[in-house]
Length: 92
Image 1 (cartoon, rainbow, N blue to C red):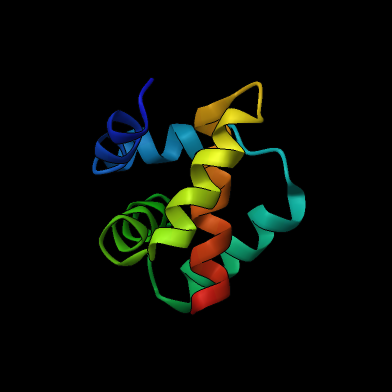
Image 2 (tube, rainbow, N blue to C red; image 1 turned 135 degrees about the horizontal axis):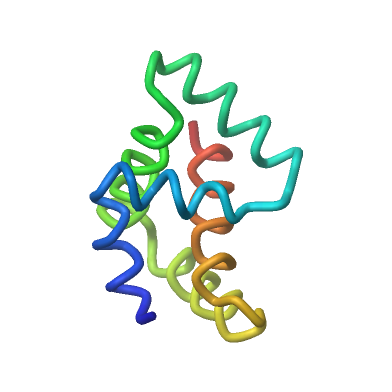
């Protein structure tokens, strides 16, 4: 899957929920759940929101880092989603 396809697929809350379910980093999952609760959103909608915010506001450096993470990981889609969500949590 291409990066653009991944980002577009995250417009669908069901796809976002499925992608979220692939994350195995317990700390990141807890942080995302807490942020979703604080924003009064279901987790899947928070994932949609976070991916949209990254796509619309990330600086060039973040995109370059994202591409590097994808290239270095056996599951580029998971690497991209994890990076995007973690980056969003750090900027809130």
